Image 1 (tube, rainbow, N blue to C red):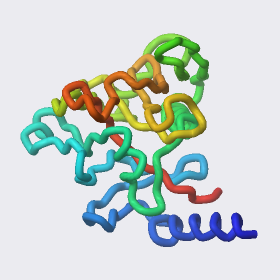
Image 2: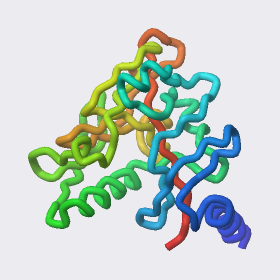
Image 3: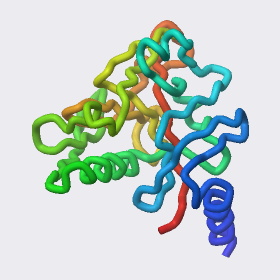
Length: 213
């Protein structure tokens, strides 16, 4: 009974405060984000841009030259940076989101999801069995690149996102590498050590909220 009450309260917060509408207002800074519903989850349709303590927020010049929106976060901040009632999506939720977006463009697509047991980069891959999924050309996802050592490494056909810890390897360090031909979800410790700032990588965040069916 206690668990059910907590779950009901969580869903109510999302549906009444944020749901049933097409925008999310982050009460911390009043920034507005479009949202959409996919497979029972409300998704931010853009990248989180909350200026947390350690976030890399691109300058106006960088935004104009790259078209990047949103801020980049280290793994520790990413785990708690979403607005109240919202959270990071899991790997499976991300893969479902990509399937939904791609099938909306081409209903004949079929997908391959496979586990890759590499020693250092053990993880999962989603692809269509060959060829480009045209994720960036179609506008499904923007080319955002990453930040490394507090330097923006922009790429028009590559984006990295943080993924919620979901009983998988590497605790909170699981992330997505999005390319036109495939999407990889894995975790590792190199380049993500908070003590090694010159090599520290920061990725983008999108947040989700349970919304029922």
